[in-house]
Length: 302
Image (cartoon, rainbow, N blue to C red; front, side):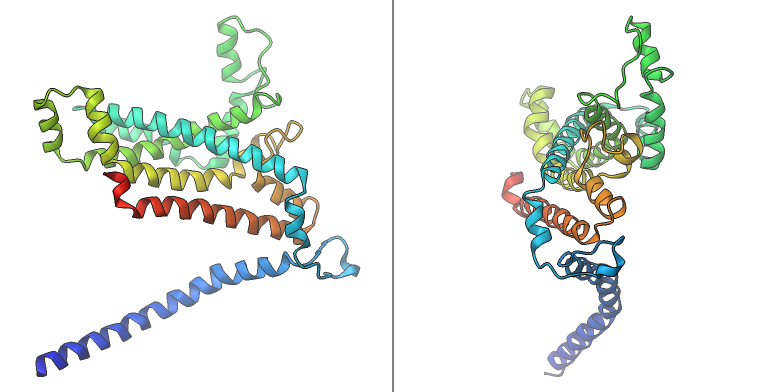
């Protein structure tokens, strides 16, 4: 009886200690995350023009949110963003899987290869964008020099062409963030037990069959994590687009993140910019919920 009472007392004290330890982080999280979020939602209900100080901030209700669905620039920016997300993440996943599988087959030099592959991911995105800005230069860029060697004269204006600008931005993203995909998928491959590969080899399975039947199902959680993180990251892309194209030419590379920045800090319409920010947050939350549900469903990985 005394043992049971002592155990209950210990559990009760432990719960109190846990709640006490969580109180301060929860308060900091509320101040840092939820307070600005609530403030942004409140500001989205007002027509706040920074340049029109005398008019104040008239209350407009859900007018800013209703404008999102009729604003042609929002529809264009969301379309560009979705193309950017699908193109970049899709190529990164396929390319990352191929390189991770190649690394998995290496017996010597794996550590050196991993170190070299991770170099692009270490560079800050703004620095990466500046590097590629000079590489894409139609006159003096490295890419134009290589193309001229193969007979393409006059250079190609990758960032100034409405047909090539968005694809060029995707190339930059793929170059920098494919190493992240390689790192996650390669770690997942190393976690697969060697017994499964030995049993498959004994049954006469080739490399393609092993990849399809063992490797891909074995790294399904890592694939979903890669899709989750990279989709969220590319959907809110801003720095690379701002440095390389500023949304041009003619809005061909204007993403929803860049349009939100321009609305707030170029056109000084903070109320509408807050509504755009809330829209981005909601769409990312929906995408994240979809991937997280897939992660929880263990039957998907069978």
